Image (cartoon, rainbow, N blue to C red; front, side):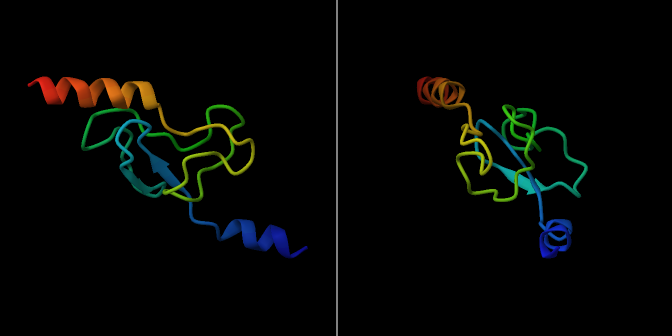
Length: 81
């Protein structure tokens, strides 16, 4: 019975799967202000809300939030420029 009340007060976030920028879901941002990637509010695999902006993996299913290949590709491009 206490879990329903507790779940109502969990702060949720949107995270950038490329550069790790995050903001509250209360913000209107849909895209990352640092790299332009679409922000994620839910796990792509199971749909669970993101409650920890520093987490690398979903607390419900264990799938990664971030796109490592895209991040590495962008880093390589910036180094060449």
